[in-house]
Length: 477
Image (cartoon, rainbow, N blue to C red; front, top):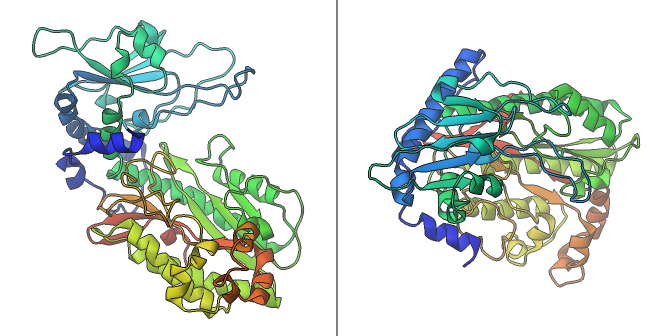
């Protein structure tokens, strides 16, 4: 049985708890401006999670859940350098704590218990303290070593308690007396992942704050790009400076692409060349707040040449397409249907700019639009940039890279990121086919040096319609 099938089977008959649906975020105007405001939101967030988790124990026939906070892993097994600690998302869902090694113990009708190690290493210091979470929502115990913790969970009948474990440190779980069968159970993980699909007010406020930070960086580097000579490396450094992040704290590797590099979907090998003249710029970069990510892409063009003008025309079309698709983020709609609609909208644009000379239906049915738009329309967003719980059914064969196949539900946060690229390896495989002959090669040759376009915003689905967490921050840019 595949992992996906196993997860689907485990979720059958287990709908999301009503408390998650009734208390899904409706769209906060602004993130809190005080620590007390954040703590109040987090207190409600934890109460909501406790209520949702209450049903898990009986359904999974367990008496407790230990969620490990994560660990620092080796960059390479034959070396002694480590990556910084990346918290286990299931742990961070409860609280944004990553100062030292830690784990949570969840029990029925009890406060979550946080065990955290005292910092003792002389090699490095603990992560900065985050004050924006509700400490009174947890029983907190400082220990020298997590492996020495005595787990105590009372049961309603006289028998040994059954405790499940979530996390990579299975050896720790075994040392705590947790059986191997109860470590990283796929049914339990699927359940906990499903809880993350509908965001609380604390989660959406955190993502709004992360969007504010990222947009500040996007606006600065747009100005630098338009001002003249600039390199990808310099733009990357400027973005980090403006958003006060490092390469280790950004939610994903920044994409800073100039010219042809805009056609490399995950371009991270920045050049250090000061580019001049007519040029395109694609930036895909985000930020985090309380562990929650923003994921934003913009594409710009500068110059007065004919080809730059053609690319600018396509850019106008792509912005219109993205705005239309955002309005389609409505409760009850299948996200994959929205993805398929994107291809019809792109076909209209390709014909309008005289890039492809055939009918819209033919363009989509033949797969030509997928030559220029090979990736999915977007994905779930949260503690992970490509967040979990919303690809429980397989996309149809023509959409192999679609990361979200859910029915849009109030409380989900998704990205909407249509693209159009001029990727030589993609185009060369179709250009000589009967359908490929409808591509206008003179227009293609003019646009190819500009690489491509992607526009991406973060959207909260609500019962009254989509809330664009990102777009409202750009002030019309």
